[in-house]
Length: 331
Image 1 (cartoon, one colour):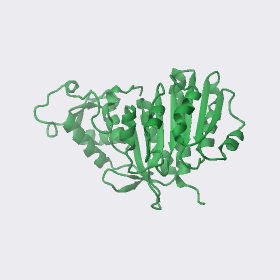
Image 2 (cartoon, rainbow, N blue to C red; image 1 turned 30 degrees about the vertical axis):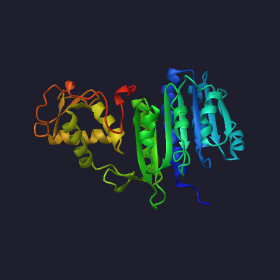
Image 3 (tube, rainbow, N blue to C red; image 1 turned 30 degrees about the horizontal axis):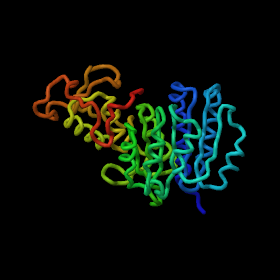
Image 4 (tube, helix red, strand yellow; image 1 turned 45 degrees about the vertical axis):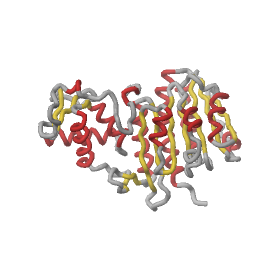
């Protein structure tokens, strides 16, 4: 049987995101939990996660890291047992069964009240096509909680993550170059830093595997190529026209949560708009940092809008971003 092309993508994505997540999680708590749940064959992400933890041995020393692996793959216990280089502070527990056993597995692992990163690999939509709520509720119970998932494209992944309580959600619908089955790679979190890193990791891992992403106009485009700055610039102008002036941080978050693009793409598009005089900034000089306020120019500003913009900025996103204002901003 040929190897699932998404296996390499998920391995790279998990290794990158785990590195970012560990930094924040271990700063908040001395105990953290990582849950890997598989609705089909367990690919190389098992070894990728354990390898990343082995590489992080100095960071996890003196902490308690629990790894729960939930899956029906009969080879999982043997594969886990073959990993002998794990730090002594990392404990691994295989849990035979489908992902719906996650609530019981997390409770048994003592995950309550501590940071939790859950990964769901559901290529056929077994979980997403059934009663996913218990799984999502369990995954969202961490303090804080992050959920990384790979599910069939076209599912209501972002909406379901919001309903489960994740205030920040980002995702990209991807497809192999050979027109194989498309998947949604998505992340639910409460951290701006994790949100930005998750989208960047999706692009990096997807580009390395030759994946394409579904752009806003429905056209599949290469993840290895930079997005069209004019297309993204038009989106940013539309958002500024709708809502009034926004900070760079707010515009980056808007791009992350409502488009397939990255935060770096938003900054590049803003630079083009500023150079063209389509938007202005406050203050006028200096680095384009997160607190810089971006104004639409007079011809794009809605009638009746007044400066300064602070009064007209919404507290959070009203689109797929959900109540972004409730998220913890640690960027």
